[in-house]
Length: 513
Image 1 (cartoon, rainbow, N blue to C red):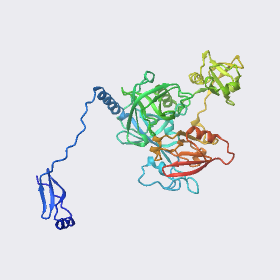
Image 2: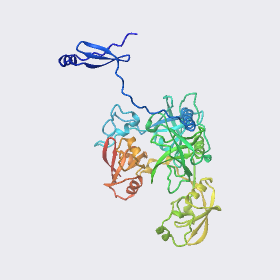
Image 3: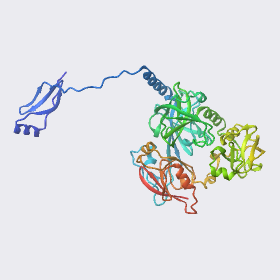
């Protein structure tokens, strides 16, 4: 082996050394020696003794920790081939290389471009596709993949990326707004599909370890671990992304934007839930998943029929136990302590032809006791469209009953865009510091992040995009999704609402009418 050639000092240093009669230490290393550059050139000398320094001791890993670490790795490895990234385009292809007035930088990946584009120019928004990213998992050999409905809502193009990086076109088989479940199918997938093993969410225990798998913000497949923090019925304190999700799984396994539609998995490698959303409350952010037993039922129907049909009463209900003192006083002193209070009767709905009226308190349905509004929804959802149910209710302290023939709940996804013009058409979520980081916005920013824009809605016509954050409504700051919704519900005549929205590109004002 040839000895390493020493690095030569700059001629200026040699001149300096000759003038000052000093030796310069060069950067060259040869084995364990150093080359000193003096007035007569480089000389190899013995290394000086290195200063002694303490090194942190190597610790012994407890066998329990090793076993848990191995379990996490095994789950990630087992589920990897079954979990996919889903990229969607919403809207028509652009007429040119610009959208919203200015082009995104060329080095910005497509999945992040909507975070970097500027707002619409003077002529208004230019029609063009919007991009979204979510996750999903394979459930059968036909290439059917479960994800969230909000991931593929309005999609005109769906691309599925497997964990080996290969991309395949896919189409939406069906989606259900009531449970936020959707199924997409590979148009022509590989022949070696690995199907995810589905577990039993009823057997899931609070405190049990779980792993969330997905592609947050379009990144490569990632896993986060945590425990099941809680299980319960969706209601006043937990508003799931689907109106008829009957239960939820709360977890502290981190669920980031892009994890939507990915699986929540137990340590046996079984999918026990579908990661859906993050909600903000006292104490921080909470991740929620839809129990897999409900997802399985909905997915099977979507594959068979393309949609899920639900029976409904046509009543807006609230739980009697959730009423405040002022509401109770308005309804009268004889108000029962439990039951479902009728807040509104849908005009032309099934119950509109019965004797039920606002202010009535439903205490039983077909002899089944009702403790809360969700009990009515659960029972009606289990019945067939066209079935007759008997409502036992109280009015002014007197018991009464009436019969209602259940109708079919209107499917929001099947309605024409014109039917949605009266609504602004935004899905909002309170901005958290972690979500702000992912959007390229200061962590201290307060507001409501746009998570979905309804196709054909006033929000879409105004040029609002997912990933933008509403920080003001009509010149008043908003610090949460609840404040934003309340402000947007206020009547503004024909002038609409003036929104101040923020993104990584800056701040702009948008008028929504």
